[in-house]
Length: 334
Image (cartoon, rainbow, N blue to C red):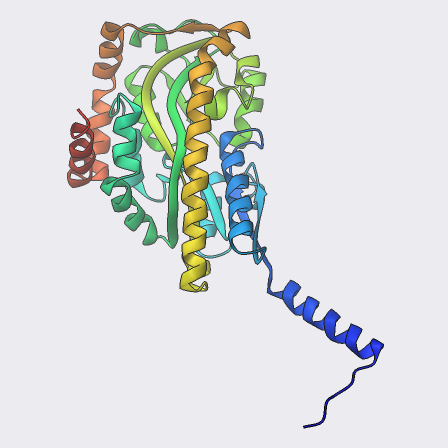
């Protein structure tokens, strides 16, 4: 066989062609979430992108789009787009997808949880796997569960120390279950996209809202628009990092494993920073000028009793077998 000699120009062209092939194999995936770029949701999404790019030697990169930009600010449409393969990845909270998947409301049933240990027994255990299978029917593969957190109440009208203090407050809520919760408390709920909420609070269209301290209230600077916070821990909300099933099925098994591992690590980190921010959050909010009220056990019991009709109604919607699975996992931590 004769050796083939390449001139300098031909060799350069060959190298350039090889480099172009390598570049062509790289893909940038689009990840959407519905809150701002200062939140732990966004930080967790970026961490996932970093870990995935590292694990795949740059073959898979992630571009993060906050505020549901690719869905016109519509958090429900954003999730539906992932389900049908129009978007690659999503980070969103369980309660946000209840219009599409009512069973997801189980995580946020009022006063279901009393500790992070109880939360982790469900999101990181068999109940979380159960909910992942339900989301798979909607075309979304759950890669890992992260954290939005325990939702606390803020408003600009008055301190809330008892259920009767909620009477007549115009409250922004994120989903249908919270409409029933607020109605049970005598408030006037309005379901509203998060992308519209900060403006609504600034303009007085609504009096208040409820969200986790570390994941939303502090990074979205809700404290600049609201005077009062009640740390009532009434409802927990996880987030999940999901990929469209069509995109997942297009990946080989090795890449799938790398993607899942990156997601699990990123969401574990996101849960950690969310909890750290929440732990320091009460003092921060007081220093920022908010009046923070922490109810007594007796006062929390009154809120629990007042919201029980919503708990019972949504337990039926979710399905007794799902609720029982969650309660069993929670009982196992005690």
